[in-house]
Length: 474
Ligand code: FAD
Image (cartoon, rainbow, N blue to C red; front, top):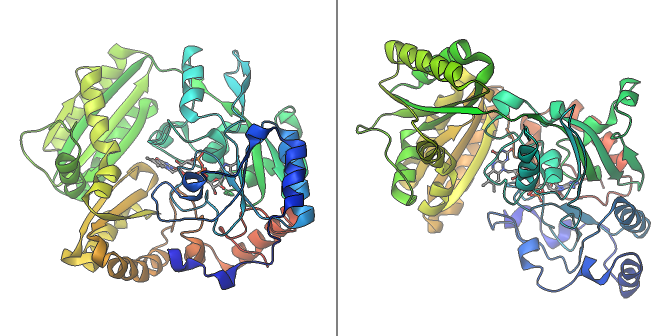
C-alpha cells in the first residue's frame, strides 16, 4: 500500500509555516498542540499506512474545530480527522503532512433523556465509556465491536460501523438521530436540537454517516439507545456444509425472532487458527467440523428466551446441525465470544495478514472464500468468518512476509472484479478510506461517483478534508 501514493501525487496544498502555528497557538491551549512523538498517530491500527504529519491539534469544542477548519480552508492546509485510530482502511492517518485533527479531548457526555433513551455526547467519547454510561442508566448503545475500548463514537459514525449486533440494532443511519458537524466550508450544521426540523426537505445529517471525514468533522452526536436486556443466551452450533449455516440462519429468524441479536459464522480454518494462536481458547466440542456459528439472543425474560433458544437448537439438531451447545453461564459465553472475536487477531498472529471486509449475496458467500483460497493456494492460510446475516464477510489471509506482496497482488487482481460481477460490495463495514479508494469503482456506478464528487465540492470546496481518501478532488 505504500506505493498507493508517491510524492508526485501530493496535491497543491500549502505546507505548515511558523505563522500557521502562531494562529493555532492563539486559539488552542498548549495541551491542544502536539508536535512531538506523533508516530502512533501517523500509523494506522494494522501498521501498514504511515503518514508524515508534524502537527496534531486536539480541540475541545465545536468553536475551536470551526476556527481550525476556517483557517485551514483559507490557507489551503490539509486536515486528517482522527478518532480512536482503529479504522482498518487507512482513513484515519495522514498520507503526507496533513494536520491531524484528533477528537480525543472532546469526550463529554452532556445530555441524557431517560424517558426517550436518547444520549448526546461529543464525538471523541470512547464507545466503551458511552456503553458504560448507558448501562448504568438501564440502556445499551446500539453498536458493539471488537475495538470498543479504543474507538470513538465520531469515528464509528464516520465509518458507519456495523458490528456484532447489527442484526438486532440495525445501522447507525437508524440510531443516530442528530449530529453536530463542522463542514469543510467552516459551517456548523446542527441537527441535534430540533429533530423535527429534519422532516422538512433534505435531511443532511445522513450524508456524514459513512463519509469518513471527507465532508466535515463530526463534533457531537445524539444516539437513540435501546433498553438494556436482562437476559442473554448464547449457543454454538456446528455443521459440515455451508448450506446448513444458511438453514440455521433461517431457523434462527423463525424461532428466535425479535430476540436474535447476533449470528456469527466461522469456517474451520478460522476456528483452527484461534485454537492455535489464542491462549484463552476453550474447545466447545470434542469433534471437529467444517463450519461453526455463534447465535446470541438478548431479551428481558430469561425463562421465555431460554425456552425459545432450546426449541431453536432442537430444530437445528433435527434438520442440519451436527453438534450444539447452549451456554450455562457467563464464563462459557465469554469463552464462545472469545472464539469469534479472535478470528481476525489469530490470523494476524499467523503471518503477514491481508484483511478483506466485503459483502456478497448469501448464495455466493462461501464460494467467494473458496475461490480466494484457490488463488492463494498453499502460499497462505485463507479464512472466512463474519456477520453473515447482513451478508458481511471477512476474508483474512495469513502469509509469510517474504511472499506477501505477490499474494496480495494476486488476490487484489482477482477479488474486486469478481465482486463486481456477483453484485457484491468492496466494503461491508470498514469503509473505503485509502486502502480501497481505487476499488470504489467496482461497487458504485460512475454516475454515483460523480454525484459524490459534487457533494464533496459543495461541503469541502477547498478539498482540505482527508484529501487523499475515498475521492480526490483536484
Ligand atoms: P478512526 O479510525 O480514527 O477514523 C476512521 C475514519 O473516520 C477516518 O476516515 C477518519 O478520518 C474519520 N473520522 C474519525 N473521527 C471523525 C470525526 N469526528 N469526524 C469526521 N471524521 C472522522 N468496524 C465495523 O464496522 N464492525 C466491526 O465489527 C469492527 N470491528 C473492529 C474490530 C477491531 C479489533 C478493530 C481494530 C476495528 C474494527 N472495526 C470494525 C473498524 C472500525 O471502522 C473502527 O473500529 C471504528 O468504527 C472507527 O472508529 P475510530 O474512532 O477508531 O475512527
